[in-house]
Image (cartoon, rainbow, N blue to C red; front, top):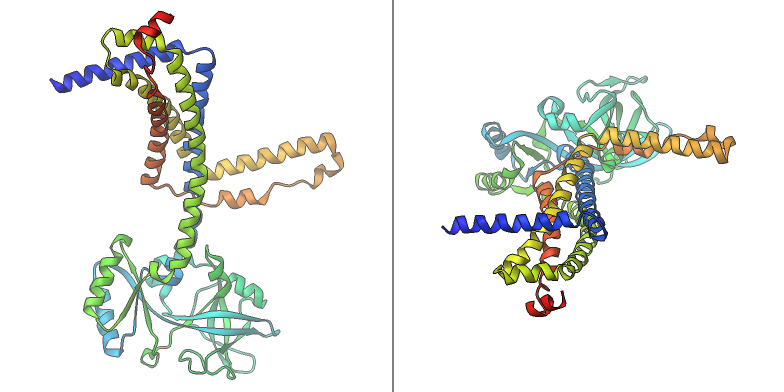
Length: 441
């Protein structure tokens, strides 16, 4: 019985709200209503596009760091017996996708022409590209090959081991494929390289590129020595099949190997990811101001409509309508404004995100031809020097990453911001008595 009464009230409220909307199809109310709907639509669309592009922009950094540098989980301080046991554990554990052994050391790299660069030299398993698919995907080889096994004999008969450099590091050293590079250890007690005064020569076998500039400018890979027992600081980088289970896996490893030092990627890159989170939150806060402006507009519009509809409100109240039901009419109207705008913004936002590359390509061409047109009119001599803005091509290659929970939150926020504004405005209903209103009319 209560359910049927609620359904009857809802249908009545919806019917009256629609009738009020039809009455206000012309004039200032219609313009304000359309402006509010467009504001919600623009806000939802903009926020979805901005957040999705920001997600894609940040994920390029995060993926490069996760796959190439930090891994999901790290295990350190394992002695030789524990290393054998750990490798067996990693091969049998279903939650582990791969476990790669490596060690690293800071080094000074000097090219044949004397150019210098500081690098983090990481000695890694030679078959890492076959063993770790994520690493192979993120560390894209742009020249040469990621071959850490094939040595080369120099012109003076010296055997040179291969190394693979980040593209920015190779550019700063002015080296290419086959060029020699001297590695100087910065610590005389380093187990990977010899003392600072004794260089080790390598030749450049490959040059790689990732989505994170710091890795491109500071990483050099060499082959992990076969006798790893001589390496005190051997680290196992572990990648999980499901990132949500990395915490549980870390606890399990700690229980199995209590003397090991276990760290998660969030701990290892805490400051960097905190900055990304703050950047994203501040950007979302700035765009949310669109909804604040629209909500204020809806609030003022609803207040005016409530005042202009005093006679109808009084009549409904005189005929037995309850105050909260009359208020719900205006809340429903605000809800419908938000719903229309949010759904339209959702569709447009998803469309632009899915076709982000085409959108930026069209924008780039449109802006170029617009500039070219005005240049022909006002400055014909400069028209031939114009070209398309290369930044559009950069933006077009950033993949928009959409997460369901963020899109749902943005859409609901757009809907309920309008409904909340209407609720706030409806609180002034019947400040004057029914008899006074009816007497005035």
